[in-house]
Length: 618
Image: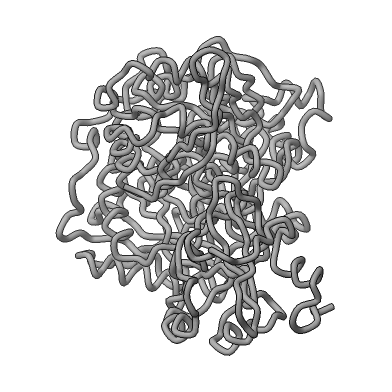
């Protein structure tokens, strides 16, 4: 079971009196961890959801991930339904999940990121209701590229969604908020949608597993259509094993949904293990497009080697017919289906829709029936060719995106950069394939990077078994970076420009971000020196403390730690956005006699007030 995090909540006592009670909730939101915590009585769903809601409230102004975050009254019916239940009686008992705001949740507005379109459904989407019936608890409705038209996360009147790791990059879209809810550890899993890559691009950019199921095996009843014949409800999670379990529970035939399909028995349950041997397709090197990214090829080769290491045999394939199929998605005939979904609003209230969305969708109004027929015929020809490529293969490996663009680069050329993000995702639904995006390392700057495994329809659980085996072999993107690098949180003399910062710089460390801790720490000035040193200790009456996140080669960590004197040691520090990173921490017993300087909010401010040590850098 994961680390237990203590926090204070007001618990109702007998009569009108209240007292502050310490509640311990799991930091690890995996299905196994939460099940164990509930079964042991360490935590209740009420405690966990209250904790997550407070963290979401703190994160939302920066990340804009929730359009609607459920309040206590809205959560109450779901929590009350679990109060008297045995945690073992429901497979998703108390599991928190987030819902993309183009998927209905009863009594909560569905906006599709367009206020003029918003409506309040009386019933939840079929998939959402099934999750609730199985014990899962919705946390809220998440932000998205308007009408699920975009792959970047910047196309919403409710705010741009920044990346969970690096603020200058986007979250990816269109399921932007759904990916962030999991990446920021605010939900165990989340629902997105995927028509052209919306459930896979954000997974790659945030270090998550993203599943685009076979079309129709998860009901899209209660989903705002983008391209109704192609739309899929997608899933985000940190682990392939968790998402395989959730998919197995969700893949149910819906008699009321015209595009629903029966899931065959071989694809109905999470697989225990990956096959001992398999054949996987790899695009020829000259077919791969990187758009100037010099790190992608090496990361892709590493992913290929990982697959070979777990029993795969690589076979080169011609990617050109797949790419031609992708080009049909946003051509006028393909845009016609998007226009059919919400073109009436564009015609009636053009200013209600973002200009970039209008520009993408409006050509669909002018596609003729002949255009549609010719495009459908060409797609069928391409599918025959692509299917033949897969005949002798079990799956295919591709990058998920060719290159990561900053938010500024996307704003400068929004249509072009968005199109490039979909290079390896746009053809999947058109060709009726299943796909799983898998984390596969990070770029040198720390931004997550990923690959996609895809295969024929109804190979979802097979692909997830391969993905799970890959995740066991690849370094975690939460801890290791390219070249085996480790992140470290510092709060004192190792801060940039201060007395001990050279100990990081001489070991090849680089500053990732300046941020603050969660409001759960107290800061103390330790006796002794020089140099003067602080200590952070977790406390129920804590505050947010100024910190920096650095990254240094793992080979240098040992020599660096050898110079760290007691009472400091390494532990997990919770940051303001809810992430946990390794950093210097001190037990409360270690600060006996030290001066409490929490009120200054950080070591720099304290030093400035006392003029201790070297002058601060200007």
